[in-house]
Image 1 (cartoon, rainbow, N blue to C red):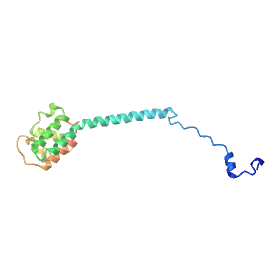
Image 2: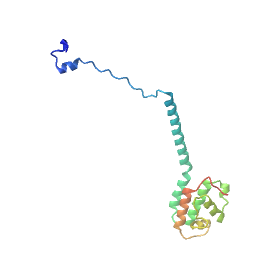
Image 3: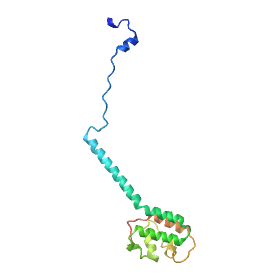
Image 4: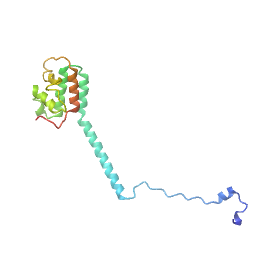
Length: 158
């Protein structure tokens, strides 16, 4: 041991130590161009996803409005048939839908839906419900709700 340190206690020796230098700050920016490009691409994809989601939400607003009206319509088959007609006029070209009546109207509903039930099922009363009173049919209202939720806009009148 060196003569200069003799007689010093541990605390005195610790006081003689030099301070450890602070490490350099680590930059938070990417150091290579690949990460910058990847960040820009990720931001663009996120923007496109949000834009697509917003457009889809707006495009499906008519379905939400129709479902609200259907909930308020109660068990009146005429009101349900009217809501179905208005929904179809919004979702499909007016020239193809407005002139449909009777079995053609029911065939259109079946053709734009993943299931059936309008032409040969509970929904057959929707062809005449706005013009003639019918007894309430909960199965037909459920079918109308399913059509509003699940009709395909890309399918049209054949």
